[in-house]
Image 1 (cartoon, helix red, strand yellow):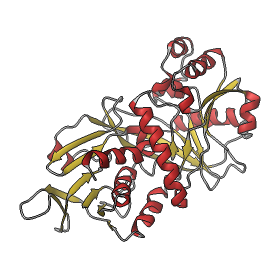
Image 2 (cartoon, helix red, strand yellow; image 1 turned 60 degrees about the horizontal axis):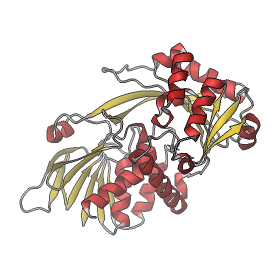
Image 3 (cartoon, rainbow, N blue to C red; image 1 turned 135 degrees about the vertical axis):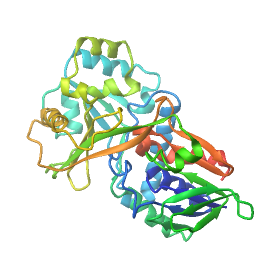
Image 4 (cartoon, helix red, strand yellow; image 1 turned 90 degrees about the vertical axis):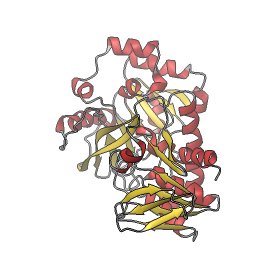
Length: 378
């Protein structure tokens, strides 16, 4: 079988990976020299802890297993089974963590409630003031800026993979005389195969609208930053209690009480913020993030969210944040029904559109692509 994959972000690259793993030939087309979208502009977290129970958690756990296996074969991914800590500072926040521990799937997530001393033993960089911390053993991390490059290098070594950058797909068809499906790029070249998988990320207009119409997927904008090296290991990912408000795993009466009894910081509330933080292999910290849903998106980045994140991080670290090296904004595609893991749609004979994983793209992409491969009978 010959598979045409359009889009070289993490979702598209994982579709190419599974196709090659199953012995198929892949032609991978990317409109830029390499992917530049949400697949690079994220934390690199394999984030199991906050996922909704059921399909979303099952997908994340399967993806976590796949990431670890692929990481063992492709060291350039920088896979680390580091887990995460969410420090809590008062009884309201602690009650939400305790409610999470009572979930029937708590053990699958690796949840454990640690005292402040136990949390500092796990992550000595957390010298600030907090009462306890929710530990999630199953969380992990990869390097988002280089993961696709490392996967592509491994794919090229198989001899079954062709990468065609700087080509924008203009048409998709299943014309008579070709194989089941074909794409035409902006150089006028036609690439035919048995199946086409469109992994277009947040590019929802143009060709996608033409062949699929208005799909139940929206675009979400975020702001993030990265610092100079911390100078010591941050041995886990770190979140704050605002993540309880954001992730569905923490829905409970205790969360209702937190929302009613503890107002979110005004800046955090205005920008729909939570703290997530991961240390990169070079020692720097990736820190975020905000969420913007209303169009048109701003074209600039705002300082207030960065100042809020700096205050929160410094309160956990008990020390000044290293100099911020980079700030950026990104846009990802999210299903409007946020309980859906991904939007997977047959748009023409032999042509499938896979998009809309939202903030789950880096976490869930290996399992999303595996499901596509299984459903299409690769």
